[in-house]
Amino acid sequence: MPPFLLPPTARRRLLSASVLTLTVALTGCALFPGQAPVSAPEPVAAAPAPPPPPAEPPGRIIFAGFAMHSQSKAFRNDVLLAEKLVKDIDSNALMLKLANPARDQSTEWPQATAENFALVMSKMAEVARPQDRVLLFISTHSNPGLLNINVGGKHLLPITPKTLSASLAPLGKVPTLVVLSACYSGAFVEPLKAPNRVVLTASDARRTTFNCRYTGENTPFAEALFGQEGAEERSVTDWMEEAQKSITAQEKRRKLPPSRPRIFVADDAKAWAEQPLRKWLQEP
Picture 1 (tube, rainbow, N blue to C red):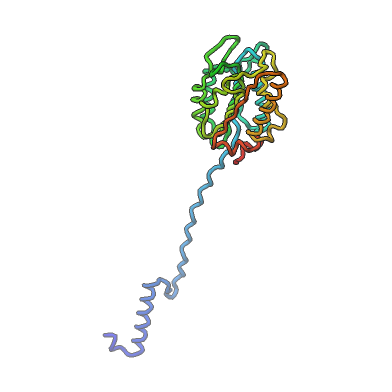
Picture 2: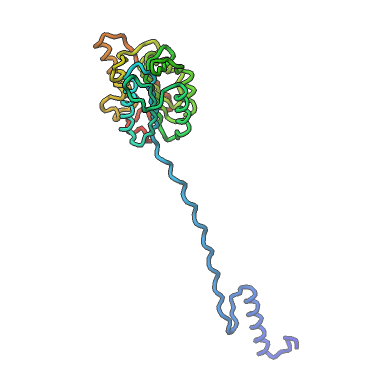
């Protein structure tokens, strides 16, 4: 029978059923008698956050010391003196020591030949990180433009400014301090200039140093630097200034010609060169 012919009561029941059916279709929320409630779906757990990146390892000093001449005990002693200061600054420093010892000195270190020098410099460039600091120290006899190498009284191929500059080049932006305790070592300053580098030399390009005798305890320049009392509290520039004052005083007392130790500080190195040595590993 068509809906409009139904009695009024029946038409109201039909209308209510139609509304219920429409509500179910649109919302899915209506329940028929006896129907169990439908539980809401469990929320999907969020994916765990990725672990944070590992912390940057702390910076360290990488020290490479070379005693290149066997005709003086002072050169190996210089490396030991430098090592002591470095350990005072950074107990976790990476130490690389090579020497051509004088007679009666220990032979436990590798020889400081040109080949071993190149190998050490290459490995140092591989392990050095931007947050590290490199200290390269060479103590030896020399001629103008040459750092001499002598093993057991025999002269070997020397280190030239070009060789040393090329060996340091892979260090790139790693802050690097180069200390040369040798006559005429100022000849190395210009070839070694680089943006994040400091160079300290025992003399200018035309001057000799003094007291590098065979039985010497230390070379005067190395002693004035690495044996300086309170050195770790001074910046690199102040440390060098005190060493220059000490050398000048000794030369005047002995009536010797001035050796004129030199210092070069690159623009990018000025910030860390002005820090106390004990804070050398901290960001300027």
